[in-house]
Image 1 (cartoon, helix red, strand yellow):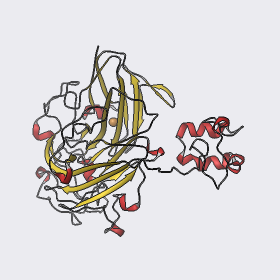
Image 2 (cartoon, helix red, strand yellow):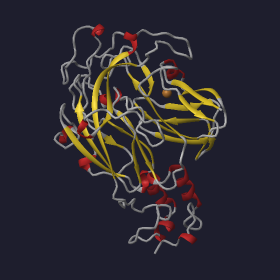
Image 3 (tube, rainbow, N blue to C red):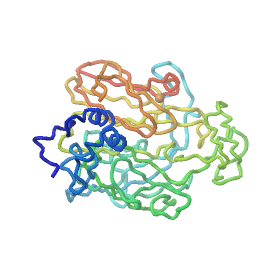
Image 4 (cartoon, helix red, strand yellow):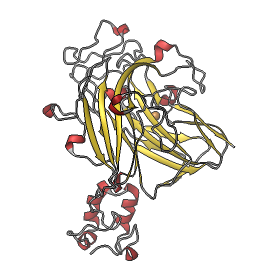
Length: 408
Ligand SMILES: [Cu+2]
């Protein structure tokens, strides 16, 4: 049997296997495990195939098993559509730029958590175990511990666009029936394109490999969003073909709204672009308790898509300092950020005045590609008014910055 924990140090399961250990430390296992098979065949041969090891550290091929706690975390979530001004105070506290409401208002979508049977919206809970502000962008934080089932009753209440929507999770384990990812050649697959007014229940497992921060988001059929009226002619409601990809968002004229591949101006994951996403947080006994937990999504909205007149780089649905969320903490607080990204851009998450430990050592900036996540933890020791922001200058100029205020 493979498992004698006393003789199996975490990162060095076999003598002379340093290279594989380094690779695993860099990648967290997973994809590179197959690569390391050729790099260290003797190690693979040493691993028995019949009995799973006691932990994934002991055997990189071990199955990430779900052993139930019997606990079910149940959520009632609705996709709502509403007018949303991403810059409600009309000003960027960092650059001093000003904006009018018509430049920064768009027809948004958001997931919100409700009482059972979608009775009424749940109140905000900003605590380290809470669902967050429940204001729509991002959606509620869905929490589970290893061994829990997350059960989501989803209803599509998109009364504006009347598009199909879905909920697709990252990080948790699920069957194809609970994937929520639309395929045109299997369009009747349950839960992948829930029609307006209809509902679907997803069940997701929190396995040991689910510990961390993960996005969930709309992954239903792509749509051709209506364009701002100023771009010439009414195009609203056209959802298939006929537009030949002519999609310049005339109001801004910068062409970032162009999505032409002969698909009738369709945009993949348009629901997520307009706000249908949120965070899954899975913990286990080794997850440190914290005093403050912040959930931050860095995401993009393209001018021309669904009434947006300006390219915006957003933090939780809002753009520019004093509009994007202001996060607060006190000296001595144990702080956790759960950060996620969605959209067409890479972002560099940076906090002024702070550093944290990563697999690469101490850092104060980390790059994130689309739909990736980052969990940052530290003990607060530096009072002051700080900035957090994406470090791409173009994204700073489109709003991806906010305040982080630390009091004594
Ligand atoms: Cu960025």
